[in-house]
Length: 217
Image: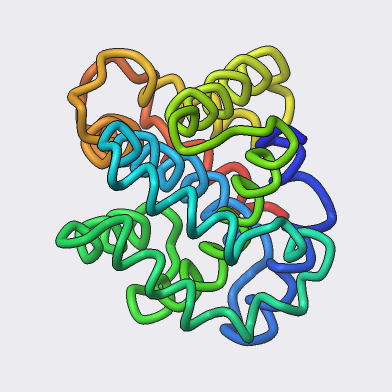
């Protein structure tokens, strides 16, 4: 299953519905957030997996807690929210507040809700990675390549099918993150693409795309 399949399939809709009911925000906002958070988290994990100890820890966590069952049973999302918060603490570390502030600004989700919603999404993203790991029979040493492959194939698919606003979001996010990498996914994805902070992104970058998907639906 590609990353775009995850974003456009039943799982994301079910998770978005739960977040909508719990936090009173639109499903489209949740799905747009997932479309940005998923490649961001995967990018951070890919960087971490370059370290052998981090790769081993991630491999063990995926084997132990993230078999992909959450993708078929979205009712797990709320009960695993506190676990999701711990996942985000580990992935983003000291940059967590910066990430949340940027995502809040660019999705229109208030800062008091962005963290709890991301915590709902994190186990879904980890479950997706865990399922891909199982299907490709990858161990700790192959996680970096697996994660890079997920991002690369999603980028190609998004840019080949840009009629869907979600594909536009992913194409913008992944296009910005894959090119001139600074080695910091936050700068690559959030800085250049979401913040519209220059570099060679078209127009207002993700802000315009989010406006299209969130407005008028």
